[in-house]
Length: 99
Image (cartoon, one colour):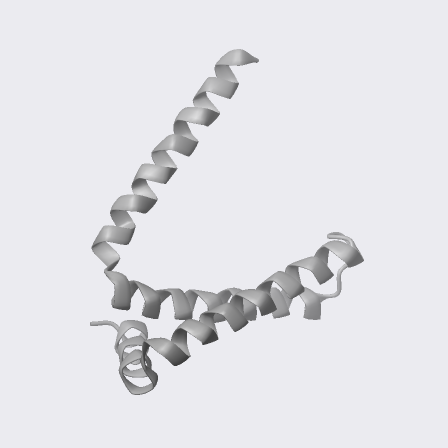
């Protein structure tokens, strides 16, 4: 088990689903806010601190997603993700053909 998975498992076991499910909502909200700020300031005009904040918030959300995957089952989630990505791929191909 890699270090990220090891610490994620420890956090989920220590705090449990109830607290961590609330935490992921908070982290997703913070990422949303950071992305809105990036858009508001203009992508090209945004300060490096705004971009760095987005990177940190993405990392926070990713860490929480890892814990939720552990709780709900990563293999099943991966199956669903692949199914959705295949639909996206098919849609892109159709749109390319229609051009």
